[in-house]
Picture: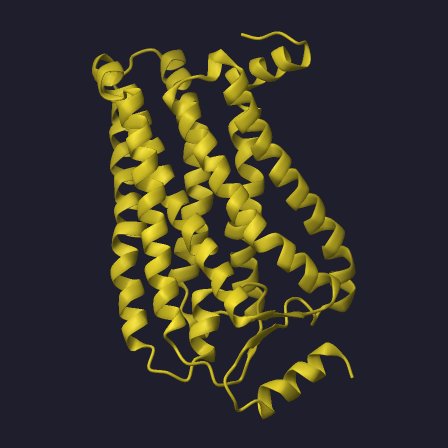
Amino acid sequence: MDFYQGSMINSSTYKGEVTTILFLGFQNHEVISILLFPFFLIIYCMTICGNLLIIALVSYSKVLHSPMYFFLTQLSISDIILSTDISPNMLNIVLHEGTSISLSGCMTQYYFFGFSEASECFLLMVMSYHRYLAICSPLLYASIMSPTLCITLVLVSWLFSCIVALILTLSMCQLQFCGPNTIDHFLCDFDPLVELSCSDVSSIQLEVTILSIPVLVVPFLVIVVSYTCIVLAILKISSSSGRVKIFSTCSSHLTVVSIFYGTLITMYLIPKRGQSQIISKTLALLYTVFTPFLNPFIYSLRNNDIKKALRNVLYNKRV
């Protein structure tokens, strides 16, 4: 009996309190699964190495000792947490065409998943505010964006992310799970877990809706307003070369924001009843696996300061 058949039997006959969650993962596509494992393993290794490289370069090179790169290292830390929370278990699922995890382990994964996603939202908002000050208020930039403010913004982002994730996880732990215990996914996300619960989930759904305002809506609005002001400021520049130069300084961040929020908006705008499992899993892969993978490349490939710092490291020059 293969894993899928065993899972379905467990799902239909399990009547007691759920202590183990079964993932179906990508097992409906056996041929693809064989190719997915080395692909996802390479992606995960490159994600960790790429983000660690950015952290090391910013720490090593004095050229990169500025607020923008300080925020970038925090984003890299968030990406490492997210990737490490999701990818190892996903690789196990792909390798065994499905796997199981304890309910407590599932809640732990859910906590770090929520924590890293929330921190990404706040850090992207902070970075957009930084770009706004640098471009729209250059004379006030140095006095406002002090080291103390930078550290404060980062600490508040991490702390608020921790609190939000903790609130949601504790609320999730209050739910009763009495079967079935099978998730047709590769991670412990909110919707799959709620679907497994036999409790009244209306309160936690309301809680998520309320918390999404400061976590998702407010950062998104701040980013939109910041870049609207930036675009208006750029359009006032008479020189076309000057416009291109200034816009290039924030194009990397804008690309990351577009990818991250684009997938989240698509995830929530498409009604759940209109989403197939393939679409749901693909969208989840975009913001849990590929966004942390792409971020270091987006920020480094078009960034002359990072390229210069990397050359200095390779040639043993400290600048």
